[in-house]
Amino acid sequence: MRALYESTVPAPSNRYRGRFAPSPTGPLHFGSLVAALGSYADARAAGGEWLVRMEDLDPPREQPGAADAILAALDAFALEWDGAVMYQSRRGDAYRDGIARLAALGATYPCACTRKELQDSALAAPDGSLVYPGTCRNGLPPGKAMRALRVRVGDAVIDFDDAVQGRIAQDLARDVGDFVVRRADGFVAYQLAVVVDDAAQDITDVVRGADLLDSTPRQIHLQRLLGVPTPRYAHLPVAVNSDGEKLSKQTLAAPIDAARPAPALVAALAFLGQAPPPELARASAPAVLAWAVAHWSRERIPRVRALAAPDVSDNPVTR
Ligand SMILES: [Zn+2]
Image (cartoon, rainbow, N blue to C red; front, side, top):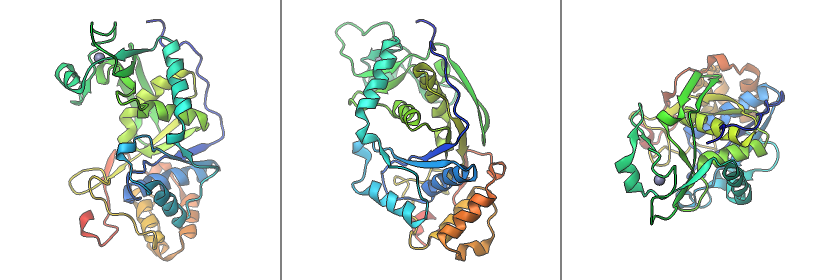
């Protein structure tokens, strides 16, 4: 392969454009409220814009009506976004374009491996996850048809300074391997969609859950290949239940009560280390957000990847 990154990568601009990018797989729960509030307060405290992008890329996982329910919840929490909501489901042309640009660089190749073959052949990364061993890197095995499209990682070692988690480094060949940019079912892979969308929306600052920390080096690799700016990153601790599982629809996280937004917002601020005064829970949602923006401190955010969620509801499934 030729030199991996051929273009000069532009620096992000000095202004601030942040975003919240939920997947519409269910109603807003405490974990997604933390990500929404953290990205909102960080953007507004910097005098920046805050955009919303619906990551509705994976139709089988989506719940009908969930996107609208999330937007209605943001409204109820007074989390006002700038501009129109971007929907990944309407961005097929932009993703095809991104893949075509990677292909033109010689950075992609077809992969014929089935899920079972991948499980049997994969190498183990230091963290126990599976690393693609490069079976199809030099051409499809005879008689095999393409399933997915992968991007080469070469010998890229990516490091970056995360505003919350500190210095992060990943050796892509050792820890991940050549990764999928177009899935066997024809859908674009999440990593590519995020990079194309962050560039299209001119995002300068990505504030999101630390469950995406290990994806970031792959995204930076794609940014460098595509010659788009790398945003600044801040990965917030992820809210987990008492079993240490990330709150999600799958772990039966209770939806937050949008009829009583202030207590949930105050709990989310406390989770983010911002030490809100307890009486703030009796204020209005806009008043809580005004306090959050005025007092926002990145330094106070706990520098861990996961934290136990507080019990913000009487619903027994959160306990
Ligand atoms: Zn393969």
